[in-house]
Length: 306
Ligand SMILES: Nc1ncnc2c1ncn2[C@@H]1O[C@H](COP(=O)(O)OP(=O)(O)O)[C@@H](O)[C@H]1O
Ligand SMILES: [Mg+2]
Image (tube, rainbow, N blue to C red; front, side):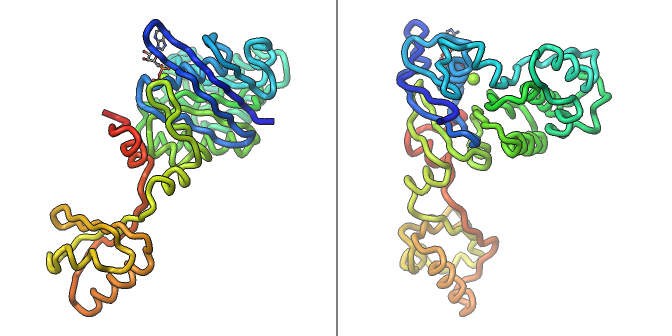
């Protein structure tokens, strides 16, 4: 049984087709990401799946239960990160968690377990108002874990965080999953979806335009790997690079040469031999794959963050 199953889901607001007929499922134990620009329909989808909004059409099953018919049963088995920024400012981290534990009738995690799960050990006696943005976000994630949920929903958990706080949140999300929960998150950060998610639904204007693992999405759309380096001598004409084994296309942006290749090993070998012979002299050689940003650009003609 999948953790979440969504079929032909629709939600329109007047003439805005927020969600316009989407189907997908989330497997148990995976980190599933819904990736798309602002206004794509991510929050609308998530909140319908959580049972917080009514769809116009379509079916949603969570842990085998029809969300429309069994909203309470679903709510007791999921965890939802709250969007509020000020969480009881005058309570400490530990006190906020203790308070939330009293809201749940069933079995709950202890405050200590929750603090460890989101890595807030050093802040347990700090007032909620004195936490950094990233720490506050992790506290709000901890609140979603109180009732030992089987599925955790995180709507843009890292938006607005600096790179270090973002990485720390990624660790938290991975540990939620390692503790046995399924994670359904939304993001508009390509890199985040690529690094964190087992599978990603790429959403745009109410539609899912692609759905697969980040690796497969990229390899479906981009057969080649990019080999990039700085050409220090500015020597051989681009044509010389185009004829190297495996290379299908070469481009130069001032000193930076990018070679798209179907055979990275052969291309690197040939470059090395040219360098050893003194024909070329390069620096900062690296190999990179195409990214989800390249995929989104290819599918929509737009960048995800404009
Ligand atoms: N309650 C609402 N009333 C009217 N329009 C809404 C409402 N919620 C969302 N929308 C519209 O639906 C579209 C999708 O919004 P949303 O699901 O919040 O997207 P995302 O989370 O991907 O940014 C947007 O155009 C938004 O303005
Ligand atoms: Mg949103």
